[in-house]
Every structure is written in C-alpha cells, then in structure tokens.
Length: 187
Image (cartoon, rainbow, N blue to C red):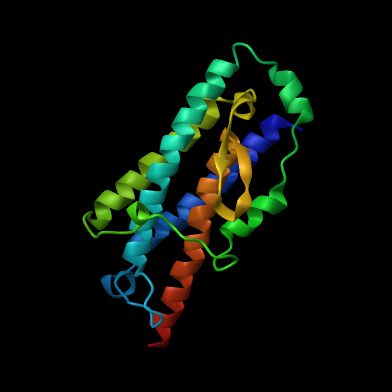
C-alpha cells in the first residue's frame, strides 16, 4: 500500500465533495427551500444535515486521531502500512444515494436553527479540520486506530477511512440535492 497516495486520494475526494457541497450555497432561495414531492428535505435542510453529521463524525475522528497518534509511539507504522489494503468497494455504496437503507439518529436531523451562512462557514471549517488531520497523520498514523462503523456493516475502520466516510456521506447528499434541483426545474 502506498500510504501517501492513499492520503492524497482522500484529500482529492474531500476537495471535490466539499467544493460540490459549497456550490449549493449559491443557489437561489426558491431552489434552497423547495419541498420535494416525496416529502423529503429541502436543499437547505440537507446542507444542515451534512453539517450535523460531520459534527458528530468529527468527534469520533478526533478521538481516533488522538489514539492513533498515541499508538504511533509504540506500534510499527511500517508493518501496518505493508499489511493494509483499502477495500474501496465496501465504501462506495456509502456515497450512492438510495443504495441502502440508512437510519440516521435524531440528533443528525436538521432543526432549522442555523442560518445558511452559518452552515456554510461551519462546513468549511469541518473541511479544514479533515485536511489538518490528514496533514498531521501524513506518515500512516491513521492506520493505527480503528473504530466501529455500523453504517452499511463497515465494521472496524481506521481514521483515514472515517474521514473518507465523511466525504462519501456528503457526496451521497449531493445526489439528493441534485434530485431536488431537477424537480424544481420541472415545476
């Protein structure tokens, strides 16, 4: 495994996804507040949900990051890198809207308490936080701690995979926002 390429791939995916999400903040109010015919969330609600989910995922990522960095003092990073293989197929479904049933916790549901500008700023800060973790764990440290991820039965995943998961979750909702937009255009 080339850990440096893996980290760069995650950075690229984060940038692409967060740039795409950021573009939604530029849409007009009609688009942002359109209630889809299926009763789903508006684009503004989806953006708030992305922020909330990132918030809670980043709590776990922060804990994993600290433990991985602590583990790097005692564990053999080279051995971990050599024995690691990323099972991308297991993760790809996470980024596909509607690929599987996803029951989110209530605390990740939008409440409408934040302005669009606040949500945008918070999501941008979350992106920078992810980049910072990747920069600090640039030598493979993120492989040294795993946390259980129950979504789509991913099981124990390392800190890098958790950051990738965060990006895939946002990607999933970008597709949902595109569906909302195409419905708005038709009406």
